[in-house]
Length: 155
Image 1 (tube, one colour):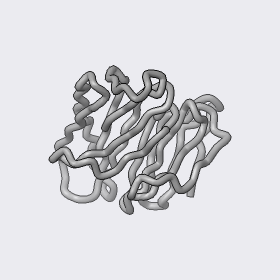
Image 2 (tube, helix red, strand yellow):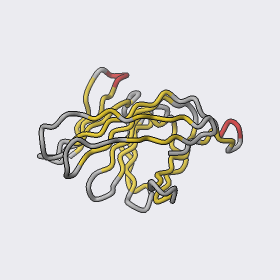
Image 3 (tube, one colour):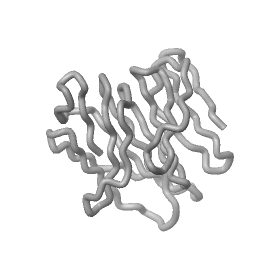
Image 4 (cartoon, helix red, strand yellow):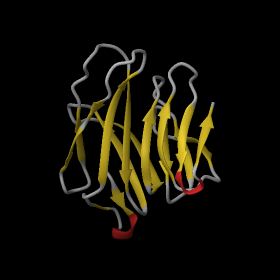
């Protein structure tokens, strides 16, 4: 993952507070915390060791301000997806079809990106969205709408 700040004209930076978890999608297995390494240049490496085989959901939460670019890399270092001009990303969930749901706490919205990284929809009128989780049984996405003290459900 790479972040960029528009305040510094695209200069990469590190130091974001970031947490990552890997959750089994079809089993009631244990949540595996990810190890986040901050390279100090706007890039981060997240490492996991799944406990069981099968589909998993990756949940990343972060604290950031301003506009950022999020990039997703393969373990070999190839950029496979990029999301530009994300305003204060505070969480990302990627479903099994490759769609990404990005909380934008500074934009007060949830943005939905297709597998190629293009924004296809944005849900506004949120108040400081922070975390999100995808329910594998119903397919619903639940977003913590922290500023309003509510949970938003997207089906």
